[in-house]
Structure formats: structure tokens, C-alpha cells
Image (cartoon, rainbow, N blue to C red; front, side, top):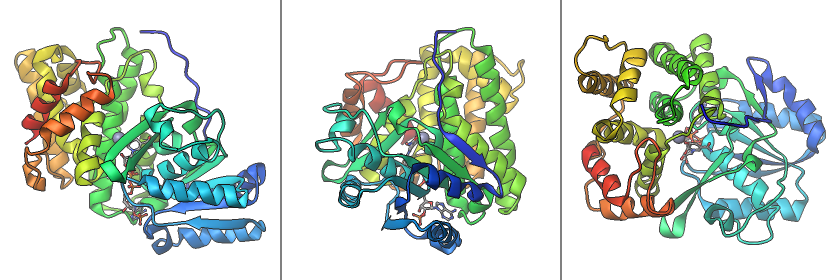
Length: 390
Ligand code: NZQ
Ligand code: ZN
């Protein structure tokens, strides 16, 4: 186990009555509120009205920034920054999924940075403070509600960049599993894949003697795998929705990375995919992660991939060689994704090999020539993984 500092400052209000905490949170930060949300799901489920009624009751002044698209765009971030500056906004409240939350994260930092907010994603500039940010989550997936990450796409060159900084932790997040009842099966499935990916990126490490974090992660993965079929059959099963929602929050709050180095190559490979083809992040991960596993297996990944197969997917220890056990684990993972109605190859999504060089070069270049820690991958390796995913 390697040294670590674990600090996550986000206050979580979880459960059926969690929205009742919004009042005290707004009073803590200020009544000039920018509300950030997506394409309308929060209005359809009645959450928008509930939030507005609480804000109105408090006498808050509310500015609205709706229309956040999945794979959120930089142009809307600029708009939100202007709104904050012009109106003296005191609290930014994101209601929705990772896309609304990440837009809000970029806004609260950008509003406190005297320059182009994109600099914060390229490393050209940095901020030291932010406006306060609160979130109300409607889809368990990105885990942005308790994460230090923010991912934004610049439209002009389809460049999707993440920024990790403690400044990205929301001050508070409200999670009511009932808000997720309305999720279409496809979005539920994409969320499940992303949650598992956040666990697996941290699980696949070469750091030895990390039994506690391994066991915690395996338990969390098994919990998600057990509960996903239940919500597919019964979308309004509170307990199953709650298990998935809490798992999604913990998956990305850095607890499962304590004492080790995460990998993150699959996320980087996927971000190139969703930047160019605008597919859902979770759908992209269902394609990329198994291909990454197949590629890393003979390159030092055997032992951990076999452990994953045995402990998460119950592959018997006497199934065969370590390689055979690992391959069976990957096969079961793909079968699980398919059972959720997702695909596991690029061609099933109408994506061919024409952009592989561009995506592989960009992916490796972003990290100074190589990506990943479980196995270090250069641009040629990245391209080979896209080819395996074809
Ligand atoms: O836009 P609306 O109308 O709200 O509809 C959304 C959207 O179409 C819909 N939805 C959300 N809650 C719903 C609902 N529909 C019905 N009922 C509900 N209760 O679901 C769709 C997807 O929403 P989105 O916010 O895009 O999903 P997600 O949470 O998966 O976020 C994806 C974005 O987060 C980034 C991804 O790359 C992607 O850009 N990520 C952010 C991370 C972070 N900040 O920590 C980490 C992740 O690895 C990820 O990269
Ligand atoms: Zn993710």
C-alpha cells in the first residue's frame, strides 16, 4: 500500500426526504442562485417544481441555465460564467446528471478565474477559489456529485478534457433514489457501466498489498451487478435504486483509490470516442473496457484480471490457467453489459477504423506520450485497443 491523503469535503444528503436539506444549504451559501440543468427530464419528473418552490419560499433570486447536453459543451460554460458575474451569483445549483454537474463545476471555477475558462482544462491557468456548488442528482453514473473531476468538451475541435482538482468537490449533494425511477433503461445501463468503470479503473493497479481497497471494491462491484437486473425488472424498486445510487457516489469519491495508483486508460480512450462520436460515456466504456482488458492481459495483467474474474464474476479457481480464468471473467463482464442491452463493439455503433490514428495520438499525447499505469500504453497500444474493440 502506498501513502495517501484522503479528504472528501462534500456533504451528502441521501434518501427519500433528502430534498428537505436544500433550505439549510441555500441559507448557508446565499440566496442568489444559478440553477443549471439539462434537456428537461427534471421538469418531467416534477423535481424542477419542487426545487423552485423551496427556493421561492426562501425568497431566493434564481437565474436559470437549462439545455445542458450530454457530453457538456464549453460554450454553455462561458454563458454560465457571464451570468454569475453579471448577477453576483452566490450559489450554483446543478440539478441532473454528470453533464449538468460538470457544467456547473466549470462555471464555479471559471467565474473565479480571470481568463479563458478553457485554460483550466489545458493547464495553462489555474484558479484558487470557486463559487459554492451544490448538486441534486437524477442519474447514478458519473459520480460527479462527490468527485474532484470535471469533464467538458470544446466544440470547435471536439476536444474532451477532464480536470481533477479538490476545487471540484461540491459543497453538498442531494441524492434521492426516487428521482432515478424515470430513467430510460438505456441511461440506467450506461450509468451502471460507468459506476463499475470507476471502480475497475482503481482496482486494476500493480500496487501490491491493497487487500482492504480490493475487497471493498469487489463488494461494491458485486452489489451493482446484483441490483442492476432488479431495477430493469422493477424500475421503482427503491432499495435496488438506492444501492446503485450510493455505489455510484462512492465509486468516484476516491475512497477506492486509497493506497494505490489508479489506471484510467479506459476513461481516456473512451473520452476520445465520445468527443468525436458523441456517444454516451457509459456506452463507450462498455466497448472500451473489455478491449483494454484483453490487451493488458498478456502484458502483465494476468494475476489481477484472474482475481477479478474469481472474486467478482465467480469464475471457479480451477477453471484453468490464470489466462483462461481472466478471459472467462472478461467474457462474463461482456455478457453482463449485453444483458443490460448495451453493445460491446464499435461496429455495432456504426463506428469504423477511420479515426483510430487521430484518437490514439490525441489520447497518448494528452498524458505526455503514454496513458495508464496498470500497463503503460503509447499511441500504438491505444490504436491496438481500438482495433480490438472494433
Ligand atoms: O438532459 P436531461 O433531460 O436531464 O436528460 C438526461 C440525459 O439525456 C437523462 N436523465 C438524467 N436523469 C434522468 C434522465 N432522464 C430521465 N429521468 C432522469 N431521472 O440522462 C441523460 C444523460 O445525462 P448525463 O448527465 O449526460 O449523464 P451522466 O451522469 O452519465 O454524465 C455524463 C457526463 O459526465 C462525464 C462524462 O464524460 C459525460 O460527459 N463524466 C464526469 C465525471 C466526473 N465529473 O466525475 C466522471 C465520469 O467518468 C465521466 O467522464
Ligand atoms: Zn466515467
